[in-house]
Amino acid sequence: MTTAALIVAAGRGTRAGGPVPKQWQPLAGRRVIDWTLDAFLAAPGIDRIVVVLHADDLMQLVPHAKVEVTTGGSTRAASVRNGLEFLAASPPACVLIHDVARCCARPEFISTIVQHVRDGKTPGLAPALPVTDALWTGENDRVTGMRDRVGLYRAQTPQAFHFDSILTAHRAHQGDAPDDVAIARAAGLDVSIIDGDEDNLKITHPSDFARAERIIGDRMDIRVGSGFDVHRFGPGDHCMLCGVAVPHDRGLAGHSDADVGMHALTDAIYGALAQGDIGRHFPPSDPQWKGAQSHIFLRHAVGLAREQGFKINNLDITLVCEQPKITPHATAMQSALAAITGVASDRISVKATTSERLGFTGRQEGIAAQATVTLVKTCA
Image (cartoon, rainbow, N blue to C red; front, top):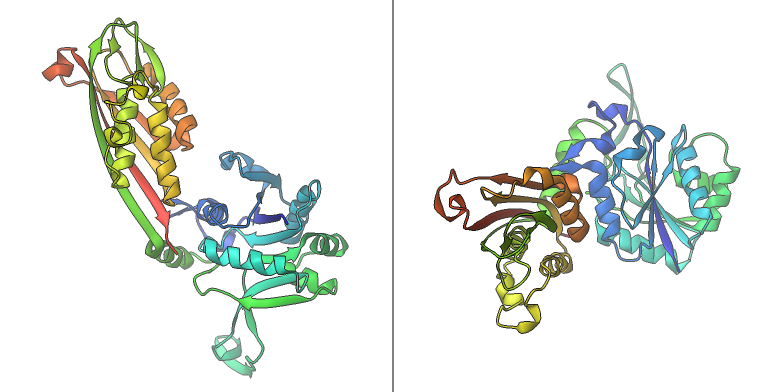
């Protein structure tokens, strides 16, 4: 039984303030939408993710193998309808519809909703929290009356439905609606309530960013690792540096292909994971690694990070040498590292410096590299 997630992110979010819509604003070092997507990417049971974006924002989202994009409409209901019609070309059994501004949803919370909708006891279900505060009516800053809070709930997303049922409901609905439960109810669908999560707030006002950052910060395991490597020059007509063959009148000597930049980067990831260095995982005494391409080592380190639930937030590599010149090749190196690690190239820094003709690099006897990485894991 397949389950898709439909993330609604086409709104302009003017109440939240800021120069851009709230989904694109920074939060704890990343954008709101990035935290939302990560939660769904990490949630067991989600087979597809479709993000509904405003037509002006289609280039804002970096392509991802598991994330598809379609264009929204003039209202929230129209945007959801567009997303459902996009999914209808290859319909899932169930769909979770989520507001992008609820960026603190936990993967475990999402997975619980997936399991409930797959159980199929009702065609729809949604998380909610019972209202516990006293309710007043008011006018001109004065209390004018009271309301009974019994049976009242604060709605949340993701709201989950059997796909065919909610698609039919949206096709029959005219105008906008506060959420998809309202559209489901208007179509006569039975919707169950399950327990919501107090931390699953929706960013609406400027002050909500600070609260969301506190919630996310409390869940984050942040690791920083550093790596350093050196290789001497030897015979050859190029140097392998950060995955790029850089022409030079000498090569780099080493047991593998001697990619000093990639080796430093690999050790930085191992270091952040407290997993030693390349030599522990790929001993130079083992002949099978003689002449090996260094991307093998780097892919292994990246795989370990993912197995432990970490996302590589950014990579920073400095190459220290007099020759060859690095700057003309830096963009190609970023692209090569992005392809190997899965990290967006705008989160990868490759730069170079000299040692002012001092030391072995100054004497052009070899190249040194230093790397730093940041790993982030959102904890339950």
